[in-house]
Image (cartoon, rainbow over the protein chains, first blue to last red):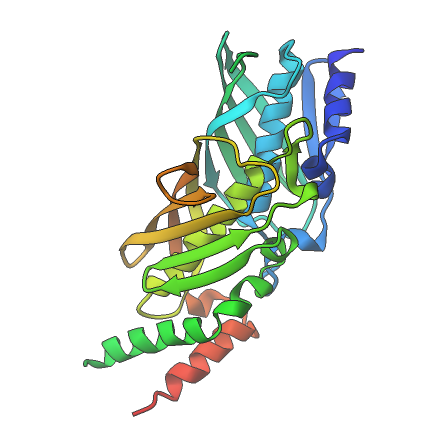
Length: 137
Length: 172
């Protein structure tokens, strides 16, 4: 199995990834994740804004998926901490995200991810995360 | 009591009265099964029952970190709301989550949040998620929330209209 197939297999059997309904579009070592909009994602119905916890969860899964894709880990990396900046209100529309792995060490990985909607240059949220990548951790 | 103290108290009493409905108005909180179990001035408490479809690691049955992110974000927002002196709309500016230990399979997750400082524009919060006590914590959060003038909100929001109405009919 390729690394992309490993990742897809993991997402397919992860209940929370299925609950979100997220998709990975993988081109070589590049990946864009897609979160097709569902009404349950809203945090504020009156202003049609997605819940920050929803875009945050999507970004965390995107960062995790990118680390998994670039590594040879058998299991998904465990999050140590995350910081999310909410830059703009995310509307009730599809959400996209990409992650960059700044460092993949023997024990830790440092990752940055951004999510956007209509315009790639206007991200709605950005995430900085550290993951534990040691198999014995 | 000055007028502003009365408003302050009234806003909080309004929230207390409607505490059970606060999460119901938030689809994502409802979808994940969040239950607001109590509020105090500047503090909020919640519970999220373990559910198969929230699992992030199928091998261990551990709830996904994203569920905790949503829970602590939401609860920090509620805690900030209880601390407000006048109705304002609120948006998360940033949120940091530290994952201390995995949640255990099959167990409810409890959480509490505290708004420890409030300025005109920003609310500063901390939150904790755990099974039993804060001493054995699953995750902690630190969040800052931007406070906006309520007049910028779309009109017709039920909660806002209700708060406005109640505040204009201050009991003597």
